Image 1 (cartoon, rainbow, N blue to C red):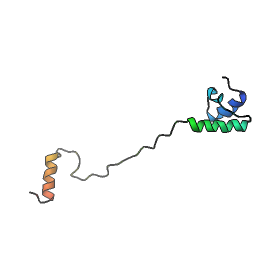
Image 2: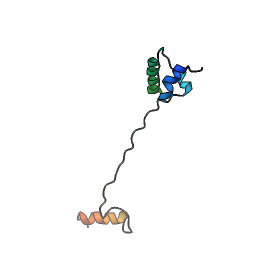
Image 3: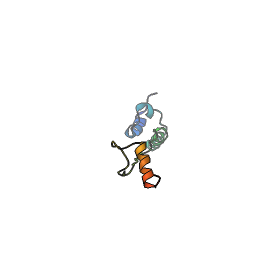
Image 4: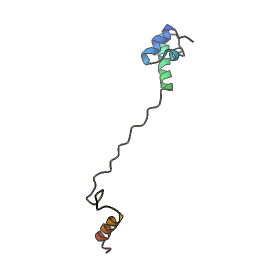
Length: 85
């Protein structure tokens, strides 16, 4: 189906393709424009949610890499801090 010049005039400024414009319904340019807006509202892809930026926050001197890290070192720190020697 070929769009009319009126359909093209209502839909192209809103980003509709000629195939989409051919689907517009209305008797006046205003009605065609309203139908183009309704078409866009119904068929536009959903907006993805904004990304969530998470931060681990500052790390203490006993957290993180280094040659003195590991489970045994952490266990020794726990025992020393909590009097479990």
